[in-house]
Length: 360
Ligand code: GDD
Ligand code: MG
Image 1 (cartoon, rainbow, N blue to C red):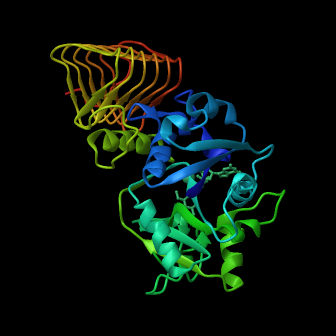
Image 2: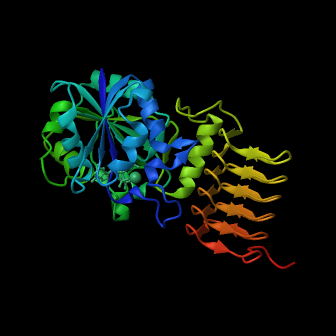
Image 3: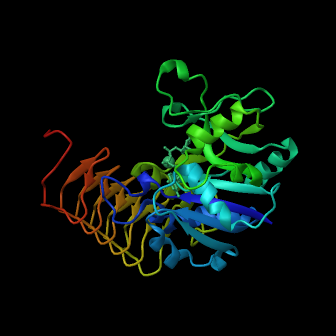
């Protein structure tokens, strides 16, 4: 039996600026709340017991995920009165684990989508007899992450969270936000106060000579910090680029949920998902986008790599490229919004109000 802790709390939990009313971990991604993919992938890898560590958003998770039986696991929730940081949250959630001091405990950041071979990471952790094993990936710009240089055997040499100076950037190998801990190591994290696993626990363990084992697997990996990453992740899930048992349908160019209406002659592609009760007008083209429940896309609109909030409307002939339209917002006909434009929830944009292209 493998147990896991899923970290879903802290400051960055809501999508800000607020464009979609739903908390980030619950934003429908390929038709279901994002966290469903993480839970389903963990279950498929043999995890049987998950403890979700949350702060102030516990009430939004439980109605959807319940006791986890729909995923074939047992799921519990631990709510922090005050955010305890990543390490404090792990320590606090560990109260609910049932394994012994030497058991392997998986820990996931709740805002990453990964194709990691989870069972492989656990096996490698056991082979290395490590105190903690960390999944590492290589990225072009490591500045927003935890830097984790290793020696050729995989032994972790240092852990530098969010390097501040160019001299600190000594590797492009970063912490991918998925760990295996020896249970007794979790129990050594101080209790009852905020602790950062990245800034305090890992550097402390290294200083005390503990064995931290890095597993570099350059699999599919996406940090869902930004709305455009959520849109991309959804499209990748729908197309099966990263497989998830939680996708509610067959993988392909699009996913249309029950109760949506797509007019004949509308074109859906690139992993677009159309939510329940949404309507796509004739001649519209929707590519690699998320259209949430009850949203309306007008005739001949062109939507690319965008997120259309629940109940929002997009007028006829409007062009959206990498835009985010908040829940219940109304974008009139003949607008053009590009490159990260965000329309606030409930805002109204008149017909022909904004364009990006030249007059010619
Ligand atoms: N329960 C709980 N309580 N969860 C928390 C808390 C807390 O106080 N603080 C953060 N978390 C959760 C977040 O919800 C997220 O799922 C995870 O812990 C990581 O926190 P982030 O705030 O998203 O950190 P980050 O993205 O800046 O950096 C982390 O992830 C990177 C990979 O995406 C670090 O682990 C980096 O080292 C790593 O490279
Ligand atoms: Mg994050």
